[in-house]
Image (cartoon, rainbow, N blue to C red; front, side, top):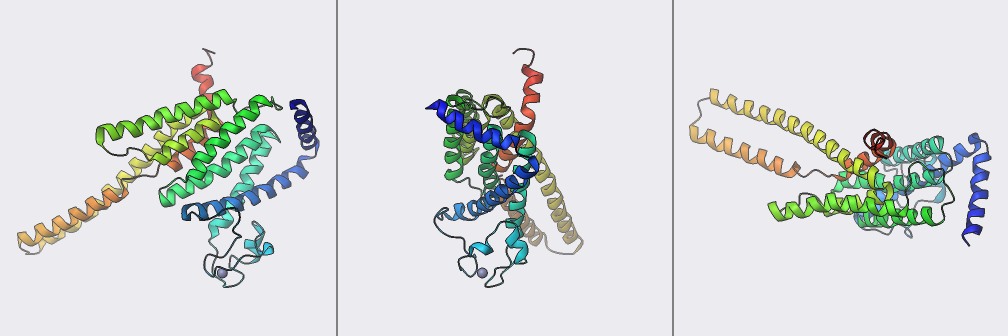
Length: 322
Ligand SMILES: [Zn+2]
């Protein structure tokens, strides 16, 4: 059975490898655009808990179903001038940008790895991770469909890779064993932070969604690259945290300066104190509101950085040992 599958896959792979890249490239680009369109559906519908498969595309404003010829990725947006064909409501440019971006990234994976198992796995991880980045950034949630769903897909890909193993020419994809190890690394680090902060501070130091998504990254990347990814995600997160802190300090300095203007007027000290109180209260409220940083976007960016650089990093640190 395995041999029959291997033979079929080999024929398909050889067909793709031997066809002119100028023919395959555009096909890959079109596939990317179609998946970009699907990513838009995920980003719009998952946070609203809407059906992602059976409900046809519709305009968010006039609710009319979009006809297939108005729903061609990239092209339709340009053709319709970025407006709904019925109510002329502006279609957010992000739909168009995501379609182009996905198409270009698929093309990049093809240029780098050709039609290989690596290529397929990278495309799947892209379709899972881009919605996580955007949804977590916008809504501060990571839908289970992407985290748990992605974790299962990652393990499944590891299984296929290990037991069918038709493509030995791989750089990125991992065996089922390494995939499971990656999940363990993720759950140990992120689950550890989650439970320790609960235990010591009685607060969630990390969202449960982040813990689940760490398992997805682990399953796709394997142990060493996911460890690199997790460390990088903390670096990215703290870099952004510092930028946020500086921004707040500048904003608060403005408020304090504003207060000092009041001093020049002859207002009663009681009045001044009450104003100071109100300002302090609002500043604290601001801090409270924005102190929660969605961590998913950093995890996604770190995972992609790790995919491209982790081999060099592990070579430097472990090259001598292995
Ligand atoms: Zn409309």
